[in-house]
Amino acid sequence: MPRAPTTLDPFNALGEPRRRALLETLALGTGQHDVTWLVDRLAWPQPQISKHLGVLRTAGLVSAEKQGRRRVYSVNPQSLRTVFEWVGSFERLWTHQLDRIKQRAERLQRATEPARTPQSRKAPAHDRHH
Image 1 (tube, rainbow, N blue to C red):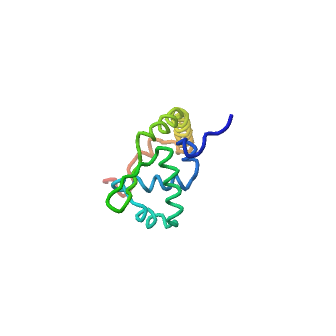
Image 2 (cartoon, rainbow, N blue to C red):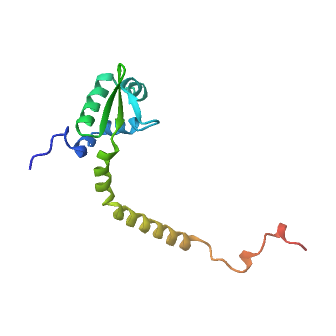
């Protein structure tokens, strides 16, 4: 089965690490930034940022609005919902793994704690009143 073009599929568009970094950066602060702001933040060449913004726009993950002579970009949260819901379907797996890790750590802690005797519960000598 042929893959969907990267420019149409949010999953393929987000498969590129630089696009994910760009999307994360775009979501900072007010969530609306122009290319100059992104160039300053990411220290990438402007053509590279514009290219990746174009892919994210075509995939519907980013929208652009003309404000005077500038084009301001923002994250489109509705398009991210599909990705969020898909990833969320795996939450039970990592929650289960975290629960197992916690249980194992608690067992190890109990096994390595010194046995508490009545004498070990007494206050240190300098705290005892004679």
